[in-house]
Amino acid sequence: MSPASLPVTSLALSLDSDVARWLLVLLVVGGVWAWLRITMRRRARQRLFHHAAPVEEARGTFAVPDGGLDRWLYLAGFRESSARSLFVLAEVGCALLAFLVVLLVRSSDVLAKGEQFAEALPGGLGAAMAPLYGWAPWIAGLALLLLPIAYVRNARRTRVELVEQDLPMTLELLASLAEAGQGLDSSIQRILTTNDEDRPLAEELQRFRAESLSGIPRKQSYRNLADRLDIPSVSVFVSALVHAEEVGAGTSATLRRQADELWSRRRETVLAQSQLLPTRLAVPLVVCFLPGILAVTLVPPLAQLMNSNLPF
Image 1 (cartoon, rainbow, N blue to C red):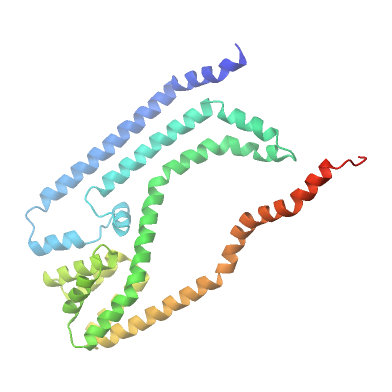
Image 2 (cartoon, rainbow, N blue to C red):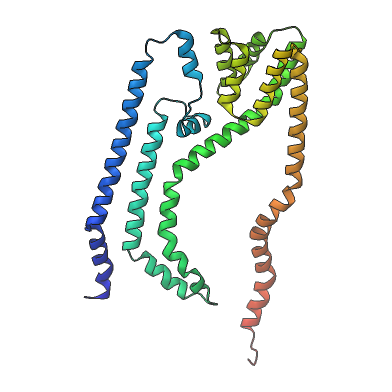
C-alpha cells in the first residue's frame, strides 16, 4: 500500500467503525429523548396551572425558577418557556459537531502536515509544539461543546452591566420624585414612560409595579425584584427599602442615601479601572508597536550588511 493512500484508508476505517456509528446514534437518540421529556413536563405543568387564580398566575409568571439550569437561564434573560429545551438542543448539536470535528481532524492528514511544518522550525520550537498538535482536535471539540454556555454567560454579564449602569440614575430620579411628594408607584410609572423598555431594569420595575397592583404585599414585591435580578447592588437597595418599610422611615431619605452610595461606588470603580489602564495597555503596545520598531531600526542595517562585499 502506498503512503498516499494511508490517510484515505484510515478515514474510511474511522467512518465505518461500529464505535463511531453507535456513539453518533446514542447522541441523536439522547437529544431527542431529552427534548421530548422537557416538552412533556412543560405541557403537564401548563395543564396543571391552567385554572389558577389571576394573582397566583402572576406570581408563577414572575417567580424565579428553583432549578439550577432554569434559574441560570432565567437570570441571563432567557425567560421563555422553551429556553431550557433550546439550550439542551444547542448543547446536543454542539456535541455532535464537536464529535464530527474531532473524528475528521484525527482521521485526516492535517495533523501530520502540521507536525512536519513544526519540525522545520528552527531552535527546537517544533519539538515544543508537538504536544499541541495531538491535543488540538480535543481542544477544538471542547470549545464547541462550551459554546452555548459561553453565550449564556455573556448574556448574563451584559444584563448585569446594563442594570448597574441604569440603577444610580433611576434611584436619583426616584428620590427626587419622592421628595417632590409623589408616591413610589406613580414615580416608577413616570420613569418608565421616559426610559427604554428594552433595558433590564425597566423590565423588572414594570414587573414590580404589576405585582404591586395585583395585590402582592410591597415587601414581597421588593424581595421578588431582588430575586429576579440577583445583583448585589439591587439586593442592598431592596434590603434598605424593606427595612424602611418595617421601621416606618421615609422612603425619600432612603432612596437619596442609596443613590449617593451607588454614585460614590461607581466613581470608585471608574477610578480603579483608570489606574489599571496603563497595565492593560502594556501588552497591546508591546505586541503591536515593538515588531514595527524592530523592523524599522534593524532591517535596513541587516539588509546593507548582507548586500555588502565583506570578506566573510
